Image 1 (cartoon, rainbow, N blue to C red):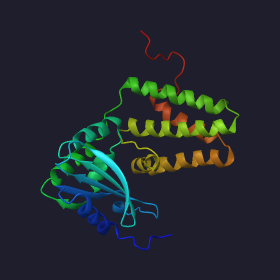
Image 2 (tube, rainbow, N blue to C red):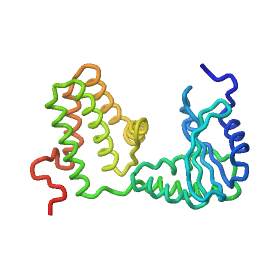
Image 3 (cartoon, rainbow, N blue to C red):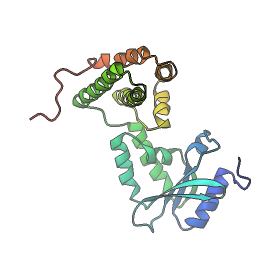
Image 4 (cartoon, rainbow, N blue to C red):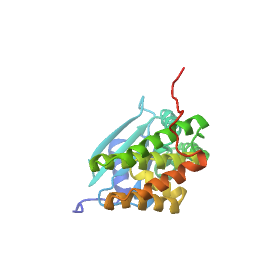
Length: 239
């Protein structure tokens, strides 16, 4: 049921900032409400830049009819999050900053947005041949478990693992950012809508009908340009 006292997103965010961070130097509203993808359960993602804080933190609150996730940084602590997001290839904070609607700015937001956009435009670090080999092995291992399993409960979880591994492999070998949960399919669609649809249909066919062949075929098509499945001769950490 829709909250009767729910303010519109920007108004709620502005009230929130005025009440909780009245002296901040910058504030952004990000997330699904900014992208036009909000649902009844969407929350407000608010990024705060405030020099009075010694370190970054995250907090969840309910205010003004909204669930609010606030990400608080001082004027330098956000840089470490930019760095770690780049290294893990999941640009959560850079994306929020880049897409965020400015709610308050004392002359700092333009430069921070430029930093975020530079990271997003650069893309994640390229995978080495060794990393690709390791990923091929783990995909092959999961695929073999999937093919050989006759336990429905186990098959479901193996399929989940395969979906994540294959999605990561496709995105990273093509120099694209990855994500988790709903951002996996969003990232795939941003990269290649046709491939994303094929992957969804293959896994949906398994989940609804128990059909494995489409997944097996898809995995082979993904791995073949990189040498195919890998098991025999693979080593990791051998001295």
